[in-house]
Image 1 (cartoon, rainbow, N blue to C red):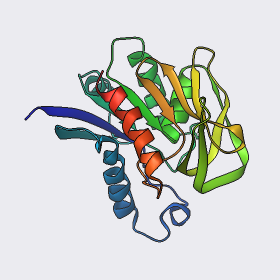
Image 2: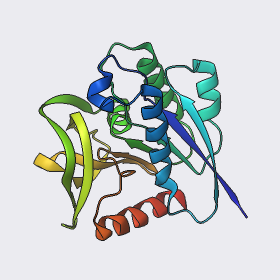
Image 3: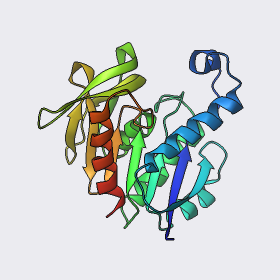
Image 4: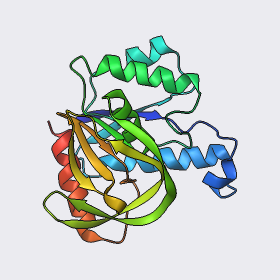
Amino acid sequence: MKIEKFLLISNLAHHKNENFYTGGIPWNKFRETAEKNLKNLTRFQKNKIEWTVISAEKISTQEFSKIISQNFTGIIISGSPYNIDDDEKWIEQEKNILKNIIQKKHSPIIGVCFGHQLLADVYGGKVSQHEKYFKGNVPLITNEGEAYISYANHGQYISEVPKTAKVIANGPENMPYIIEYEKNVYGIQCHLERKVECPLSEKFWEKFLTNIFST
């Protein structure tokens, strides 16, 4: 059987407000579960999956650049308890590495939540703090007017879409929830790794993900 290699860039660094994010679960267990859930993005693949997982806050720039430059079926950039404008060296490191990698031929990339916002910043967009915090099931409306349900958990959002990017679907308050930054580079504000009780939504994600990871 063919083996497909995926890279998960985990941005789930420990946060001082851990109880807000974990509900009292020990951080290591919270991170382990979140990373396991993110691997659900390959749930529609037919072949055997081999994962490489890196912790963004622990890895050196040299090693990070070396790994991300390899040939993967897909690269997943995770969410985070941090905001992309927090003063953390590892966040700036990741931005710089992404800026470098997108200038070259690279594997398909999907950024989820924090990863979505990180890509928006890298491509020249603007990320802002919303007056509300969005958590729970929210609407997802495509450009074709198709309506689905997705799971949200964020306070920041894309307030200005990069000029070269294309919005594919919007979420609550018309926020950009799925953006195509360039061919095979997508940002998704909602947590598509979290299944919702909506068969139509699963069908949408199956078509969406299969199309990206089969190119």
